[in-house]
Amino acid sequence: MGDPFLGNNGPNTCDLECEAVQFYGDLLHMQQDSFWGYVTNGGTEANLYGLYLARETYPNGIVYHSEDAHYSIPKAVKLLRLRSEIIGTTTSGEIR
Image: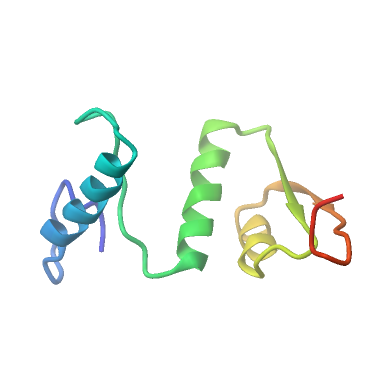
């Protein structure tokens, strides 16, 4: 519900979100203050936010995704007006 490190005006889940982000930072042996994150309500929001950050970091980038990618990927690509390339897959679902 916003940036857990800055607080918010809604239900206060900031402590729980910071704890979750910290858990994964510790799990990955990251140095304190070298990571940031927030907890999304699901995979679609996470994919959308990840692609948004990618667009802001690499404005001329191209999104490559398989034809079997989660439905939210082409949806987010269209919403964010990103260039993309769809890669075919084998019958077992592997990218060609």
